Length: 223
Image 1: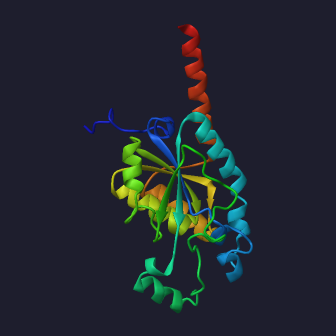
Image 2: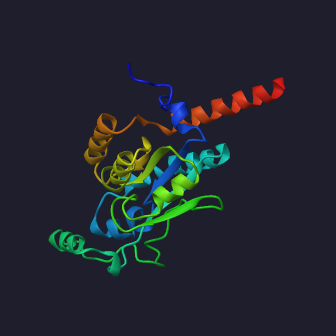
Image 3: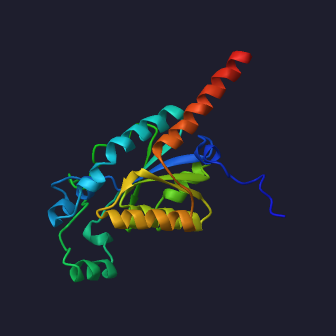
């Protein structure tokens, strides 16, 4: 019989402040703003913009609950762009610079890190490969990642997948991530649920935090 007493099974367990980090991937001007890189390419940035107000509420709720917030920031300065990445950009006619250090395009879109949050820089789709993310999470004793950001089917999925492969629980917050094509978003949700972890809403996660707060208050009153 498989042991379950050492597993994080419920959403409440996976979202608990002692276990969880809220990971915000690539919510940056070049990916989200009308005048950013993808907006200039003609991508449907409105599709990713629509989720940002919900994400802002979730970030605020995470901080209030004592959940670590980690901002993953893409930086694609020329020295960091590999030969395969350059070839792909040329093949897809996407050689315009994006997410360059210190530029408006690389800055965060609407969401902003605050003291106590962590920022992890990445140079590939994945926020795990050759980054400090694993070390940051281990330093905080994190076991479970609540995944949000842009785009659901590329950088969010890649980061979550690689985190799962190094033994983190991963949960995708479907109304706090977005893609430039609705079918890509829906397809990523289905793959995630099938292969990696649960797909939930921000309201469900915030409900877990609220319930835990009520229980702590009641327990304090009994003392």
